[in-house]
Length: 275
Image (cartoon, rainbow, N blue to C red):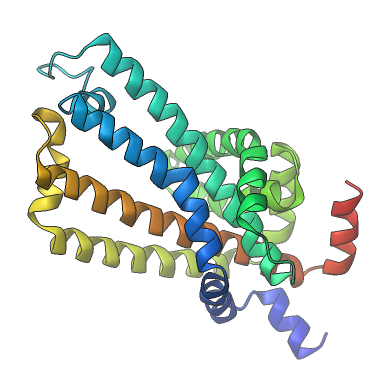
């Protein structure tokens, strides 16, 4: 095996991180517009309704079943359920679209905003099913002394991109991920530890910098909305979107590298066309 092939087979963490930022730089406008249509606009509509209802929509999403929570109207509860469902669909669709767009960019096939959104919406249901199965399995594994849960997460970590990029079903994507991650779980574990450590550090710094805005947003459901609460909610939402874009692009880049190191991508593309 050549040095280049061996390096690809082992998964080059430095190359993955470098490619992630390159993909972000090349597609910043596309990813930003996709996030605008799928997440930001629905969130702004929800925020407006929350302001108009004196904070009741947010209260219904966070505390309406708790003892001592505010008295809520049926309309506020219904709106909260509707926006929770819309938020789940839009967030997972953006996640799937980012997997797809990042992998395609590295394949030399840049994706536009329309294709990203349509692909994300098309892959929403299988991705939703996958994440439910993964959450249950990883949680059960964590109960069994943590290690099994980590192993399950790493084994199926490429299943989401397999659904988004290759159009596979849930169980086929799990099988595909197991094949691609075989023998590469240690570098994958190191990569995700680095990423989550960096994101946690950034998150803590962001929360500390926000100060009073974060506190206001945290307790927004206990009283009528104030300007500080609105600013806090907007900033937290935007920060969450940035996190989502970074993780979505990283997932697509990792998937590309896993495939490139183990198979002929030209043959894989032909198989996707006739799938």
